[in-house]
Image (cartoon, rainbow, N blue to C red; front, side):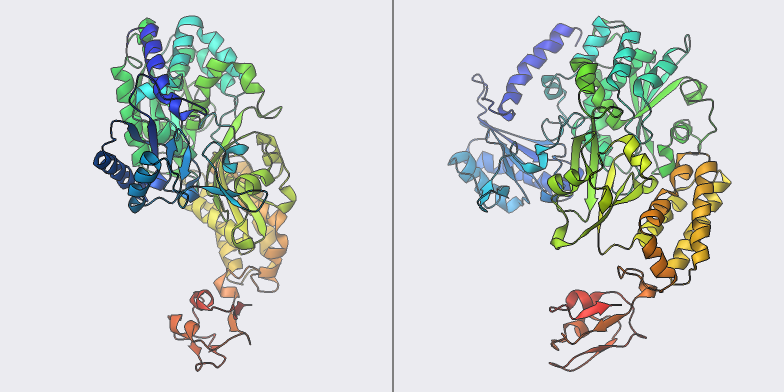
Length: 627
């Protein structure tokens, strides 16, 4: 592709192909295609055999003789992972959930040949008359309060087809900056948009770019941080799997803005599907002349490479990431100098994460004012979250900044399963904090979350219910950060270990009130003295749970009791008078700790009991309790 004219011709051709997927869209009259089937190809659905589902569609369509009339392809993640594997059939946008290979033949025969939606597999919602009604992909409540910018093309386009990306205005932003804008103008648009880094710290993107741009006359680098390591986080993975060209285009724009001709995407090797699609997208971009030399005849040169990380959480910190690219051990470096002045190989370098880049092409095309109109005063635009834990609608969502936690958890997330009571939500992963029911109406933005002792982080959001022990939650996250510490600085290397030892002591019932005081003092000291963001934020889960759930800590150290019944050393299992003598608990006990005859109340020998909970799960009448 040598010119913008060729780019525009491809857009015109493929926008017709995509028209069928848009609301009210009509099939291209010059094409045989009358229907399109999109099979979710995100990691979650792929692990549930969505590739086999796609292959079965190809087989059944051929058997029916309609393979030329129906286009079948795999997309990225749709977001509603709880319903996977997912298939959407256009033009009706029928959302089929929990798909199996055995369901494909019926959908092909009934839906595609006879025009009848297979309601037993179609997504439904309860209407005002308490009746289950089939809802199309476009009508679903899960998406109603979302505003998809970074996820705009995920679940919509074929990530292996660069021309479908172009059909959705892809690479038009790059064409615009190369032909209509100076580097300074690009940076000014980024500043005016108010876009802040989506990787955790929330540093203004335009300001970061301007700091590197001012360093003239030397090599520069632009880097994408795709080393997503938070437990329960999969936002960047989903973008790379579903819309890799958005990141590639944005990095080329960033390279033009700061004067860099080389870019690197640092992605963890544990993301094989994301790596495969990213590398395929980079190859396609080179083949189409959208990477490499003299892009679109502009004289601008930009090359892009993938570098694989070994899965070290600390390499999400920008200086540790650069050390890893250089072939060194991934350990943070002292700042200053900052990467914008002396980064990769001591050259000016810019690092942004995947989600940050995914916003940039649309900001260039639609303008800074459009982006600023979304969100709050200090947090513009949208944020992608990976919603997990004790929640009905596990998945990926993108909301305007300022949406409340209540809206996310109950309106989008569908509330807590099994009628359980909401207890807390952890935002920001191991670096964040636990927020409670009193925080549910808090508008989500950078500053509000920090003020409450948590943080935005990269976007992990884990919901907990009444069965979660908050002391154990703090122990879990601290155990993770202790394991992932690089060991370079003493506060993180030694301090977090001491904190973990105290938490383990508390969960064993050996803690004291003095330990709680020591725990807090250690946490504050580590926050103030650790070298990098990992150590500085590692105490957040402990501090937030101490603040919001101090009574649970007191119960552990004073009463020697775990209110949630999680900490094994502090609980005992008992059988109440509700026992009907069915013997199910006895038969499921791996330790032989339960005795009793048929139709007689059973008993548990607490000395033999290993506290596995198998008896409680097996009991049909909830006769087994913990105390």
